[in-house]
Length: 271
Image (cartoon, rainbow, N blue to C red; front, side, top):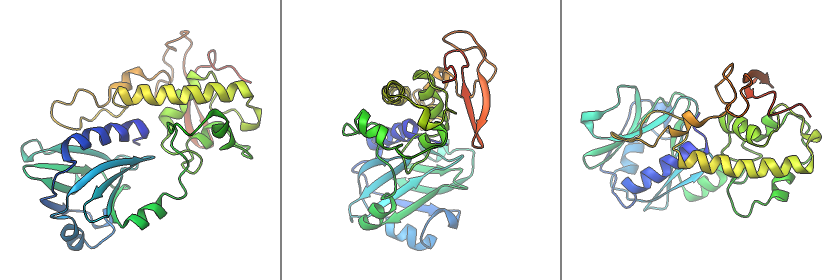
């Protein structure tokens, strides 16, 4: 599932291509992907100008010139592609937005969605989301307070979007590795120095992953060489049985609260 670095990569690339441009056409092939009747959805979008593209957690928000927001949430298996009909993706496309000769294709949105909301509805939609991990107002003390009263495994709370927005399975494991903390550790067992390392690791991992294009390998446009660049840089995620890049010990794949976790037993010793 796309996480903060993947969605921020999409935001940056979309901003370069569609900000200030008019939506000249649209189509919907899966009615459940949108929140209006398909004809009404298309009619509401055609002729609108995309003012700018924002990201909130794992969501993209296209701000339109009529004040409404087009919310894109890719969920599991979803992705975006920008191109013309000549390089149309050879996959199921649920939603298309046309910008002249080029289109934004919403692919694999079996669980994902594209919703057109008023500004008020968009604010309400995100009220329960936790803060952004890279918000400069989020200090290490405020970060620690987000987990106050929680008694479960660290990974479960790191991927809880109500606690903090944008972190999923991949980056939770990567953050824990860089912080030398096991993802299955119970939150009450974490010490002050652990929280400090987790906070610093969260910032460094998310920034590094974003700069490298995230871990999802599908290109966003023809000739895209950035998207997916972090996949080769993952230290533990999806590398079960492979040697740790830091010490050579085999990476462990396990489960914590029904979620897969990857960690190095040597670099991330038990508390």
